[in-house]
Length: 76
Image (cartoon, rainbow, N blue to C red; front, side, top):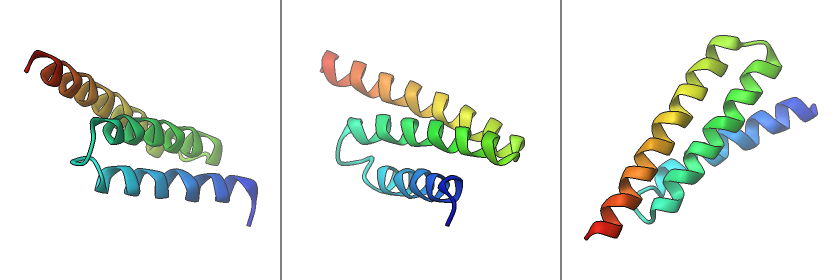
C-alpha cells in the first residue's frame, strides 16, 4: 500500500467516524471538517480534482455548522 493510498484511507475513515459521532459533541463536527480537508488534499494529490473540490466545499460547510453549533451552545 502506498503512502498516498494509506493517507486516503485514513482521511475517509476519519470522516466516517466523525460523521457517525457528530451528535455526541460539536468537536466531532470540527473533526469532520478537518477530515474533509484531508480528503480534499488526497483528492488533489491523487489527481481527482472534482473529488478534491467537493471535499473542500464539505469542509467549509462542516466548519460553518460547527461554528453555528458553538454559538448556539454559548447563547443558551
